[in-house]
Every structure is written in structure tokens, then in C-alpha cells.
Image (cartoon, rainbow, N blue to C red):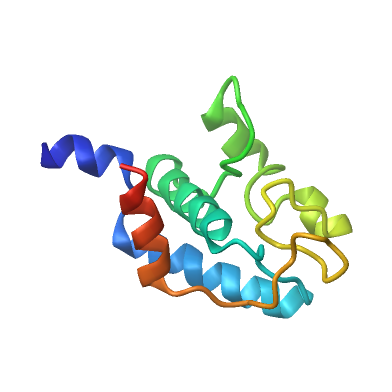
Amino acid sequence: MITSEHNTKSSDKSLEAMRHFSEQYAKRTGTYFCSEPSVTAVVIEGLAKHKDELGAPLCPCRHYEDKEAEVHATYWNCPCVPMRERKECHCMLFLTSDNEFAGEQQEISLETIKEVRDSMG
């Protein structure tokens, strides 16, 4: 049971690393998390899971034929090229203030992320 649970969830180390990165990146780019914290939590969890499984925070909101190849191509590694170039975040993790879904937060607690993760089974 513990093994299968470990495979479906990110490690706490990666989760905290991605949480910290997301907060710092939002502040640096003047972007905000979604007004619905569960969206932010799910994306950060997905990034952390990819960091554990693939060694890089590959965007969790896209479908890939070959995740390993995508990691090496780096285009969709967070922050992805569209985000870096145009502040376009497909995941709604980093939103500009004029986005209707943007909240006022640039921080999210580890507890919030874990609560959302655990509530999703």
C-alpha cells in the first residue's frame, strides 16, 4: 500500500521545492496564483511529481507522447517558453493581474497543497 501511494504522489522534498519556486517566480514576474487555491495546489503537485519521476518539472497540464523526450527538449519544463516569453501559463499557475481567474496571492502553504492532494485520493 505504501509503495503504490508513493508512486502516485510527489515526495515532500519536491513538493516543497516546487512550492518555493512557484512563489518566488510569481513574485519575480508580477503574476498571481489562481483565485481558487486548489488549482494552484494541483499544478504544483503535478510539477513535483514530474520532478520526482523525470528529474525536471515538466508541465503537468499537457499530454505528451514521450515525457522523457519532452524533458530533454526543455520547451515545456516549468517555467515553459510561452510563460517566459509572453507570460502565458496554460496551467493557470502564473496569471497576470488582468486575468479573470487571477487571485491576489503569490503564496500558498504546503498544508493547503497537501490537503488538496490528499482529498483527491
